[in-house]
Image 1 (cartoon, rainbow, N blue to C red):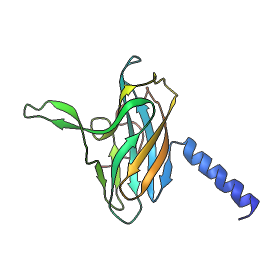
Image 2 (image 1 turned 90 degrees about the vertical axis):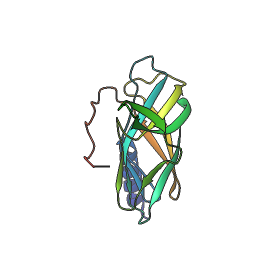
Image 3 (image 1 turned 30 degrees about the vertical axis):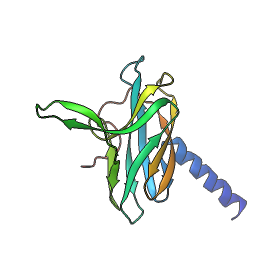
Image 4 (image 1 turned 120 degrees about the horizontal axis):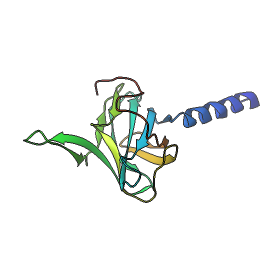
Amino acid sequence: MSFKSLVFAATSAAAVTLAGAAMAGGMMVEDAYARVSTKMSASGAAFMQIMNDTGADDRLIDARSDVAERVELHTHQGDANGVMKMVHVEEGFAIPAGEVHMLKRGGDHVMFLGLTQTLHHGDVVPLTLVFEKAGEINVEVPVDLERKPGHGGMKHNN
């Protein structure tokens, strides 16, 4: 590889990382952001779109970050009275080959429980996503306390 190609590849990789996108093992993470509900929140959440371009079904089985005592995969579920509550999804989220799975507010998401630091608008949260087949992807997730629900990202039915 020529020096020019090497510099271009490094610059491109840096631009992708700075844009909140990451790719490894054919899994691509885009439009990631984190938020807390109040400045003093003891918990927070991360949202993103995950595209499986591996040619095989995979599953997001874990997430890790040092910004919280625990990091869990969560979703919202309605009870018999129609009341929505968050629940830990121990088996993780299936991501079929060629599909995009949205982690979004009111749906599947990464939950930070017992924050070890205050998350301010503009901070960056290091997050490791663990996939059953594709392995680990490290994502730099910007804290965006101004984003409204449904703002940004591609619109998908997942």
